[in-house]
Length: 115
Image 1 (cartoon, rainbow, N blue to C red):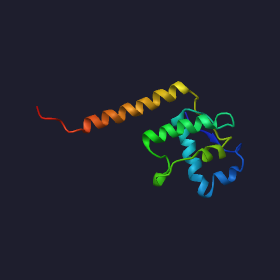
Image 2 (cartoon, helix red, strand yellow):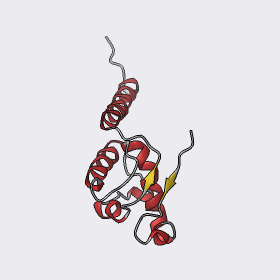
Image 3 (cartoon, rainbow, N blue to C red):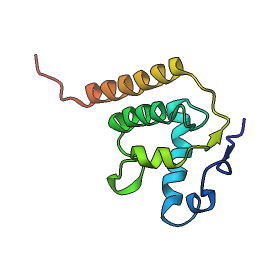
Image 4 (cartoon, rainbow, N blue to C red):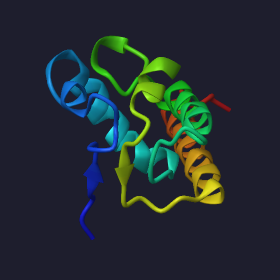
């Protein structure tokens, strides 16, 4: 299945896919997969940001140079759509899986105590 997205419904769409804003838009497009939300709307942008913030706290910033996306970045992209399946339950499972993998990786890397 292809990953499709559309920015045409965003206010000032052209500015969001060029120049300095392009990187933020691309990060938010890929964030849709991580947060399990198909779009950013006036009704759900706060939930989108909340999930995004949770993901960035677990895996680190999605932007280069340790730049975290802001509520304003998300709100500016109201209208951004994709073909990601919306699911709060899937998001929770996904986030827990990331946390588990990270914890298991740290456990494997921990020095073993001598008996």
